[in-house]
Length: 221
Image 1: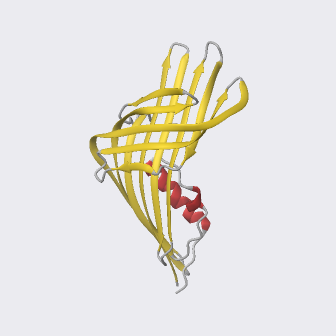
Image 2: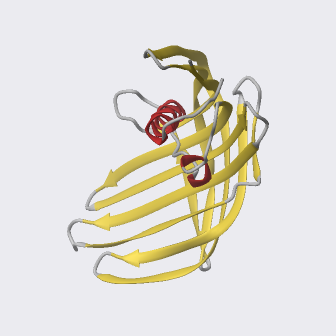
Image 3: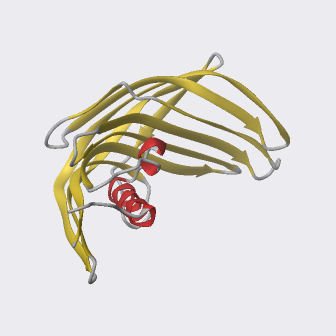
């Protein structure tokens, strides 16, 4: 039996994983050359909020994740990362700025039953004024903790494609929990306090925790 796979299907697998975990798939897994199949696992924590007070609107988005992949034939890949975004805009003055950055999240941990998660990360970020497109970049520090709230939501799916020449099978199961989150973000001498409520399906704002695993196998006849 010779096992192969198409890049289109692995992209679909990774996008489904990202949708369940509210995180983006790591670049090294998007381009990984997998033959025969693989197993993967993902743990992630995310938070998003948008607040308006008078003329001012502040938006903050954070995601941290650990992703592991193991080919059926033995090769392994692992990625730990964090993404951050903050923007403030004054509609009355038509002015504001955004700060964004990403990097590795070596100090990211999440409990087995999604009751807590902690993140401490240092990465490169850039600030850009909306009225002036010249970015200013430098090191940033992010510290955030999540506390699970409410019950667990479980997801499970199995998809199979059969043709005269091959059979592809994708299995996935995951669990998520709403959470509150708080912490701080520091950049170029200024510290921003962060606070997030429990994630809401209606507003798509708030914090949540996720853990999942799955597999992809292709059998060529």
